[in-house]
Length: 282
Image (cartoon, rainbow, N blue to C red):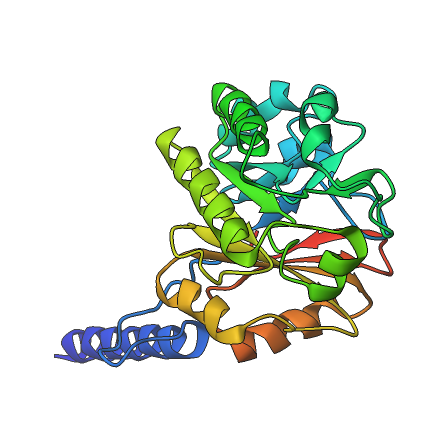
């Protein structure tokens, strides 16, 4: 009888301990089922604001089960796509759809569709002037290469280029807002036709066909985008990423954003002390 009571007591203690661990360590839904965050690690080799972007060597060593953004037209980057994917990562390819860059191999092909004045912030870039002629074919040719290299995503930078009245007047952008929307929707449809996903950049308005979004965030300019749009992507189970720049308290900012949205938000932060990206959910 003593042994029976001892075993019963032990099982009761273990059961209580298990319940306490579940409720204290893991969020649960109304039925008591543990909730699992869909946030994943984010790595970015394609761009940065103040410090070094993630290096390929570090990505190969550290990135697992995450989203890795590469600039596919930079050096020998595409040689590493398969190896990065082998660690469970989804690999995205960066392209700018709202500008032409003088250092790209296809600059001469895209040049006829660009404005005459360089972008003040980025003197090697020129805004796309209009979208109704050959620029779409130049972008599709890029996407063809990206698909052949085996990427999973295409990330559309500068897809908001034609929605600022001051920029339109300054640079004489003639593409209308409706034409710009049709342009990036058609490009996303083309990406899908190649078996890849579309990552929007800084806006999700009229982008319901996109599969995820990345927002650029700053210490003095946080959550500046349409919050309801970002939340709608999260609610739909889409990948939502915040890429935050030049921050001394990355952890605090991440907690702040999770408070605004939820734990499914993915986050990468340019650490002003370490002078490099720091990665979460690893």
